[in-house]
Length: 282
Ligand code: HEM
Image (cartoon, rainbow, N blue to C red; front, side, top):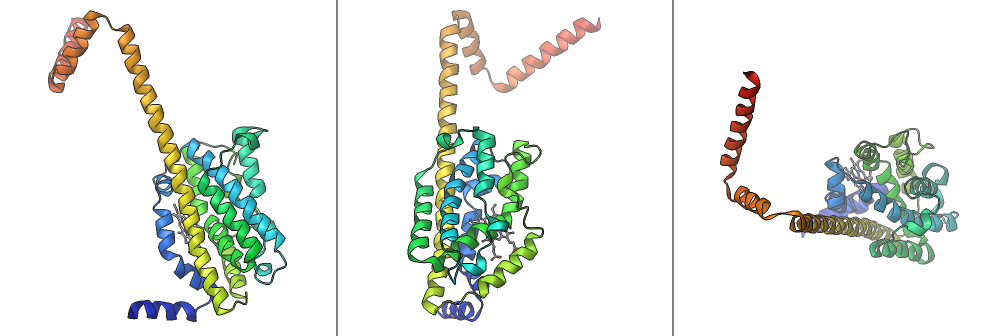
């Protein structure tokens, strides 16, 4: 109880950029530990994972940037409105065109969690523009932080050349991500908020992380589901081939080989190699 009070006092004493970081600390850890982000950290992201991520990001940034544009002159939005430096929608479009071709719009998949996220962004833009800072912070500062590492991993894992398909990670208008983040934080701190609004922003930032986590989990589930189905199909295909092509003799050979212990099979293999070697030697 005392610790909670101490933490809350510490949070209310500091500026918005520090408060928001403290309020979302645990959520950040949870986001980093989603299966999708763990595959990234292991350095093995698949093309399918990346394509699906881009599809979701398209819908998310479409809603976020529409809400920011519409509220650009709002007192709580103007200080953190940086379309030249940060806007991602066109970059994502470019990447989607690269992977899906000209008619990419007809091909993209938009799962339920992504729709929920986009819907929340529209609600916030309409009913609580002062909360937009929480969403802009979560996405853009994330993109300029761990996101930069994710870009390098995507490039390496998928062997993408000349930045093709990687525009999302590239911020040509930001020469130093660290300096830009400092500027962004100071702009966040200049926003005037009542106590209630400030608490609302902090709560909304936690929600923003949660919405991201749900998007990642749903994406990962669909990828795992597809690969499981693929495996099952592959297994069925192999079984079918075996059933249709094996002769009685083959069957005997197969059953004997599956019954024979592994070390005996290895020993037999080594003997055959030695025997063949000796025939060639002499
Ligand atoms: C593999 C996953 C991730 C890694 C390795 C990672 C890593 C990092 C690191 C090292 C920082 C600190 C940068 C600094 O202090 O300047 C950071 C900051 C941040 N990350 Fe992540 N991150 C990951 C995922 C995410 C996700 C999924 C989100 C949100 C959707 C996110 C949002 C943020 C935000 C908003 C910040 C700025 C914190 C602040 O300075 O207030 N990160 N991340």
